[in-house]
Image (cartoon, rainbow, N blue to C red; front, side, top):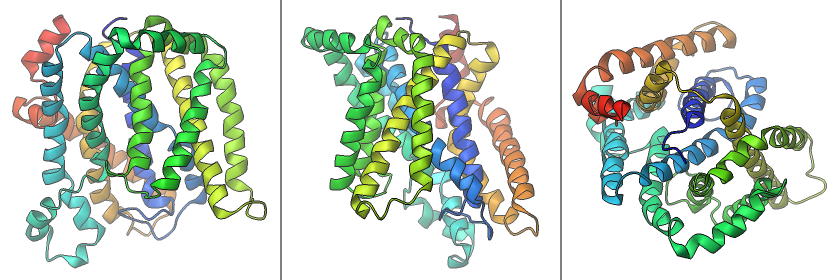
Length: 374
């Protein structure tokens, strides 16, 4: 396997941008978010409920694949130290400096001012949307022994069996059934909706995608199977998507208990998530085979963009939702303004300054030049 895959670069940038679009829409979809508009759009909610099934799961597959590839060329200690610098430090910086404004603008009347409340809010160490980075750090630590096991003789038999499964037309898809069963069981035993790492119905669900990313990239023929089967996986995803929306819109409460209906929902969402991940990565592998220079830079900047974007959205949305305009105008202004502000901070404040780059998990300019040269 090559140590860098263009399809991972493309999908990482596209999916993080999709996360940004999701958060731009959150004040207007009727959910109980940090900032809410007085009016909401059911159409927006209907669209968002589908895409939220697979955006982050696919990102965890990408992260798992990336972790395996990196561990294949550097030592476990170097890998661990890299993740402390690039995940743990930005998480800590984010919880102390980036998250507090979100907590303040959720209910500003409860505080004298942002600056007065800032120390107490910072000490809450609330991760908010940075839970994704928290998960990545923990999963990356787990990736070290997993990589050692996957590359040992003990795993050879398991990978032979996995190879036979993968080369069957339904092979990769069948792991969606395993995921669905696992998620239903986890939700029954750990029903919390919390995104904290201690909530096993969330963390173990996403760990599945991370580990599968490591497994799929372990051998070239495993990974290439995604590109070979992209059309078949897309067809299955189309069928599952229709079933997903039929179940979403139709009322089945007369035919099953509340608990059973929720179990079906979790299972169906898991099938969509896994199949969509296969589909997205397969299409990217088939058609997005080159990493241009602008994409290299975007891949670098997308990380601080992710860290900053939700706080920028919350601050701007707090004022925009008070305007006497319709949802279309408000969401358009929020999209353009938040993207511009976040992009400017990333490109003009973080990107040029090595000190800021370190705080936001980027390599220093000297290290970046060395890695490109390599």
